[in-house]
Amino acid sequence: MDRYLIPPDTPVSLGRFDPADTGGLRENDTEDRLEHLNRRLETLQELLYAEGKHKVLVVLQAMDTGGKDGVIRHVFEGVNPAGVKVASFGRPTEEQLDHDYLWRVHSHTPRTGQIVIFNRSHYEDVLVVRVRGLVPAEVWNRRYQHINEWERLLAEEGTTIRKFYLHISPEEQAERLQDRLDDPAKRWKFRRGDLDERARWGDYTTAYEAVLSQTSTPWAPWYVVPADRKWYRNLVVATILVETLEGLHMDYPPSEDDLSGIVIPPAG
Ligand code: AMP
Ligand code: MG
Image 1: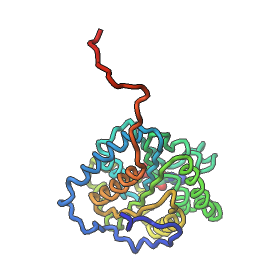
Image 2: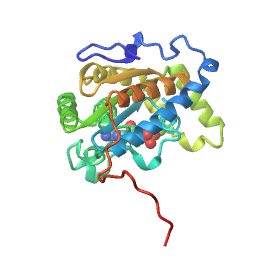
Image 3: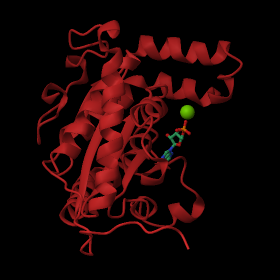
Image 4: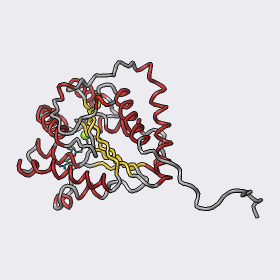
């Protein structure tokens, strides 16, 4: 999976990443694999909670229809919902806009033993905000540095961070938008505004390239996940998360009491 990892301070050109890459695998050969990873993740999440030492933050970013919701549904399938929290960040409220842009995300960062998934994130403040010119260039330009330092703070205080850019092609997006238009059960997801965003594909690509080039750090790395094939996208994200959690070398804590020789008595 290291080929999807962006090393720190590396200029990234997304044109060099194939959104349809499947790592030489075929869907039929990998059916059990995601299920196996789901079970591993389930166990590792329980261990994370039991051990109570680490916090885990997963950041998901993508163009519209890129599959953020799909990843949340399929990668975390079967994981105890009590141990995982999803925080979604849409348009900021007036109160949020009256604060610095990290204010609204900070309170959603994970507590000890918890996994939090950011569905969109503080990165919107250098993506949509940049593309739409919602603040002057000198304002968003400073933010890459803020973000790196803020993520460093989280990491130094015990948070393991992994960030995923789900990389789809404009052709795949066209198909997915068309599906949303055609399927009555998906129409609610379609907004006219989605086409305005699509019209800015090139600007978003430039903005994402700046994010990937400037904010992949040893303490909060970015992965570019090929996402035209949903099954492969899920497999890549699940594999990286399982490897990350395994890398924490967690253990179940010992019981606080001496439990040797205990026999459960009949109920009184
Ligand atoms: P969705 O994820 O489809 O519910 O859409 C959420 C919308 O909120 C997207 O169009 C984002 O671009 C927008 N959004 C998220 N964060 C910000 C932000 N900081 N400033 C402006 N718009 C944002
Ligand atoms: Mg949307």
